[in-house]
Image 1 (cartoon, rainbow over the protein chains, first blue to last red):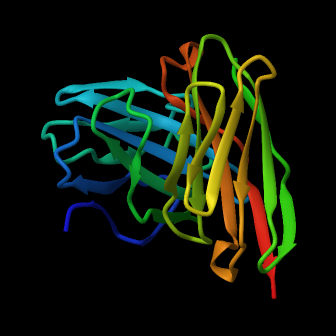
Image 2 (tube, rainbow over the protein chains, first blue to last red; image 1 turned 135 degrees about the vertical axis):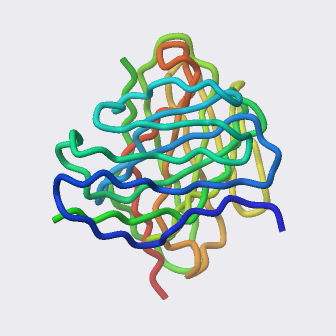
Length: 113
Length: 111
């Protein structure tokens, strides 16, 4: 089955540690996205990638970094510089960057204490 | 910048019809999307409107009026499984044509 996988589902880290969230898709989509969701709020765009080896900052990129070395993979690193990293992180993909339908992974819930 | 407004909560009974409104302010509007998200789950795409009018997909319909910067999602024959959060999202020139999401409307369907 084609889809997007994110791992792990739950992640716990101590403050001051960097952590990398995994996102893999086998839909052959060019574009991939990372969103952050806080309780009772909508999705905010962290980074997006329109094509391999290219990515752009979204609305809340500070304290995060990404790479896109392979079409299938778009890992997100939450660095110690992110002031409030505890959140639900969602990865998505679409056929191309301006496609109106995005496909989402199951998410990773990160807790930093 | 972009801003979207939608009600935070809506409650309805099984079998009823409910309308979730969304108003937006954007620069260079391209389209309005709707997504459904069950608690703790992944958002799933429901519909997209780029032009004025009504788009129907089964029990769900979505409407857009670009002159009023307004759209709505209409859910008919409500079922318990429709209890979820519903997000409107706009694509506009101001955000490099990326999606900007509203804060979501929590729909509760009562038996």
